Length: 371
Image (tube, rainbow, N blue to C red; front, side, top):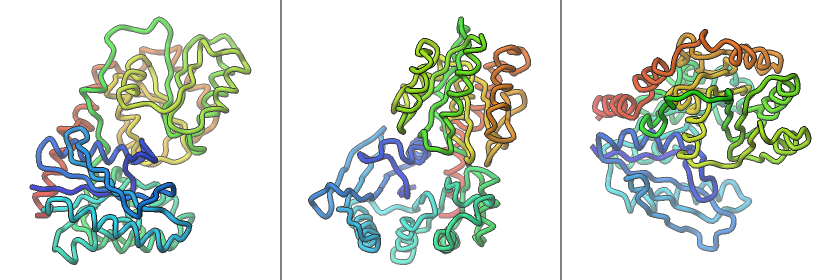
């Protein structure tokens, strides 16, 4: 089968980590069949109306078409669709399109279906479509998502929680939950124990991730005599986190860092003991799957589909992003290692649930039924 991945979000020169979970899904599928990737994105600094970046990335032909962005959203949308059309002319004709994220970009998948009779499925990751967020997500977003979703052959939300949200906006198509993927050859456990217990948090550092609250709690515990390390950072603005740590002179215990490659993320997790996710809203975060593959436990807020992929004794789920709850969880993690399951159990769970083989085979099965 020839499969074409398109996505509303995808890593590019302007946003190097945006939608990297889509790229990982494509790589999992590429283990079993022929995959190409096409993406279009606007660039305000570009002189040409269209520019083509055609590369082989991790073994997959990836064509990103950059169009000249303007302050006119209607013109931008028209250029984006034209960019997709121009890019599609350079690709091999697929048997199926694997679209990602029910944003208006994916109207291009509907166009391909109507013009060339190419069926498409959709993988959904968007927190805006969660049932919990129904009243805060705009009518326009929900209407477009409903239209595109009902043109698809199958919808693959990354969690049951998100599936309920998609059904709630009126999408009637068959749905199969397929979670995010983790490269279990890249993320693997450390066999020796750390002399000092290590926490870690890696994210986009946007406000709803609450990275500042994690640092605040860590500082409080360190000043009270608890001894541990914290690695914290990601691809957002980390200047305030750095300022908080330097103010307390705790740089020896708290390492604040910027954007990381996936290999660097795996090394940081390899050297940690517990991942902290303290978000107000999530779907099914890759970082938790990567943590389990690395054999490390997790403290997380119980939001979105996190509890669906959180085996017993693998960590601590918090009712909400309350700093007192996080403090108690970190203390328990530091003082009661034996309560939680061992590394081998976490690694086996990750391999069975999130590995490239597992996820790739699930998608192949779905493609075959559709085609």
